[in-house]
Amino acid sequence: MSKFLRALRVVLWSFIGLGGRREVADQRMHQIGLMPIIAIAAVLLALLLAGLMALAHVAAGA
Image 1 (tube, rainbow, N blue to C red):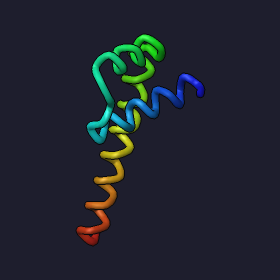
Image 2 (cartoon, helix red, strand yellow):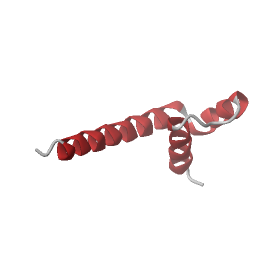
Image 3 (cartoon, rainbow, N blue to C red):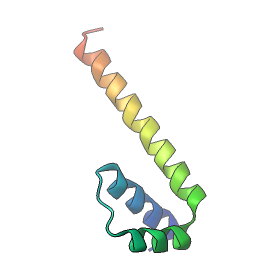
């Protein structure tokens, strides 16, 4: 599995609060690196917020 997909998987699991044991998380952090995880988390968070804002805009009928 590529580094990008591993980082994406780590971030998605962490968004729902599942990630395994601390030792496993530390091992993944050393394999992938901190910056790719932070970058992917920031992009996914921005997409989530944009989606929620669009949903609120549609629900308000504007």
